[in-house]
Image (cartoon, rainbow, N blue to C red; front, side):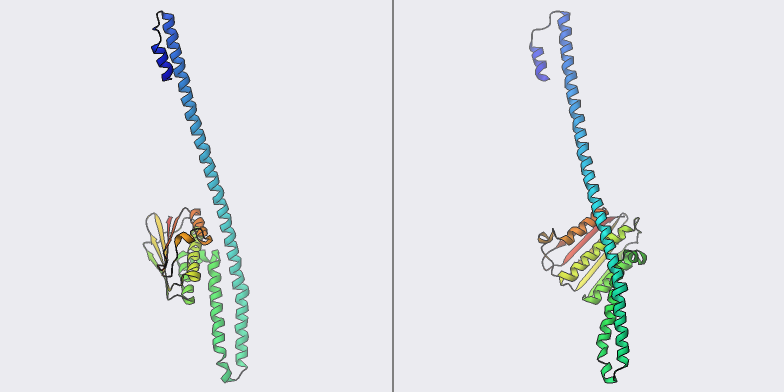
Amino acid sequence: MHYFLNILLQSKPASTPAERYLLIYMISVLVIITSLVIIFFIVFQKRKNKLLLDRIKQQQAFEAEITQAQTETQEQTLKNIGWELHDNIGQLLSFANMQLSILKMQVADDVKEKFKDTSEAIKESLAEVRALSKTLNNEVVLNIGFEKSITNELNRLKKMKFTSAELKIIGNKVDFKDRKHEIIIFRILQEFLSNSVKYSEAKNLNVILDYQPNYLIITATDDGKGFDINEIEKGSGLINMKSRASLINAHLELTSQPNEGVKLMLNYPL
């Protein structure tokens, strides 16, 4: 536009009213055309940005639905396993313990003592199976409560191999608006604790629930051998925890260094 204006201004001055009107007309037309081009470009850019934003939102919604479906499938699978452990495996162990007790009554006194260790092992296995089945069933977790479920899980793990496994609560408890989020956070903690059992060689576990006005900050740590976070960043366990966290709009961060244990921090908006 400036180019055309310069040409018009540098040209021979209009000598008649008609020429002056023609000059004004041409300048007006150029201004209008330029304005229309600018408006069209702005509208086109806004439309383009809106389409891109809609596409991103659709992709996010699709990914959230996939994660939700996977989570629900996993929960149903865990529930079925829990039922199987409690009803079938639990009954088999109870039957084995009962048969052992009957057999123990039919042997001489000097032999009965030999049954003691086996009987205790069966009882401990039965208690472990029942405790595990409760943590796998989301209905049981909701029934006994979020904090109690974490305590039960830590107590179960402590009996298995840890010197200490403690839960600390800071602040006043705030109820979850969506109780499904209790299950999701509990499963994230379960994943972390399960990895500590399998890989960390840790002796102590700690979980802190810090209730703040707008957030629940959860910190879980072990004192195991740790790892290089860059080497484990794409592991399925971490991906699973992060996908669950994103499903409830929580921020999850896992930090570790060799020989310095592992720390998980979850920031959940209440």
